[in-house]
Image 1 (cartoon, rainbow, N blue to C red):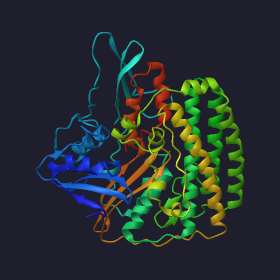
Image 2: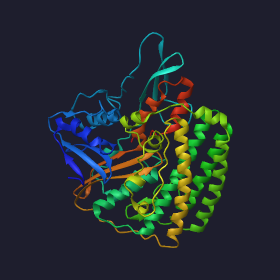
Image 3: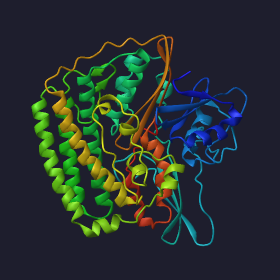
Image 4: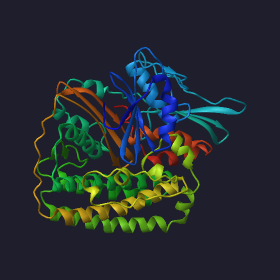
Length: 465
């Protein structure tokens, strides 16, 4: 059994889930070759609720926790798990080349508007089916699966030490965070200790990832609100942040910077240059943030648009800035500190409004926080060498690791049998939060849908993994 795992009967899962929900926040659920697992973040770390599945049906939980609808549909698709009382039993991904039909609202004056799967921008495919009465959105159905790659099935039987490059490329925007979670999983299973300087270097890398992602989010929220200057300036700052990433790791998107046992050769080779670039970027970012708060029409446009209440965020298992903008407090860096966060604690940014403005305010606070973390990290790091620790995976092992990425909790579940991968599963923050986009959009007018969407600014790739 995995650490902190409680096994229950399949028929008792719904009741056991409700009891555990009182103690923590939902991270997700997935199937193994032995059964199903539901994951929570509690005070002591990750708590696992599991059930062995043979012919018995599992009591579905997505009726009371709709945020896990995707997880349960995926378990049914990929592992043939039979659920009792599954509210949405449509195939999650293409079945025989066909995607599930959209769920739509009906009634007098209700019409459907389909956006996608091909979009106007250079983005990945997804189908948005809006049901609207006049200009007001009554329902939104979102369908993914157009770029499904079966990455998890493709790594079964592989040496876990060979998979770091593949893990880094599941998705570009959260590459470093997922690489860190995977490295921690391999290190946990193999009982590998990573040096403090390496932990600090990793912290710098993932905070740089947070910086460029939040800058991009502010830029696209400016664009969706019609503020061209904010869009252009934000994108320019994101480009500068990507160049800092390249100077720090040799790759703009931070690919392959974090690996099991340490960091790649050449990471933070010229620390003075990177620190100088970070300081100059921070000064420019502060000017940009000042311009945002001076723009009353922009703030008015963001205010009370796309509101997600705390109750809805919890029912939908929302994570990250979207969760904390709705009054939540879960930040994995604070709730279950890992790496250098164990001795360099963070301040959790929170808002209560749950709207676009609140989500942007949380990201602005985290931007400033990331610059402070990076500054402290460099002070602690000094000129210490970044030696990689040898990693020797055992014959068997089972673990779940969670880190806080730019969009929220990034979860990696890894099971080894015979020193090779039996099961590798990713639960990305984007996968977790996409249903919340649909919920937050409802009740708004159709022209506000892009703004609500961009205030979450989620990835397609790590959901279509």
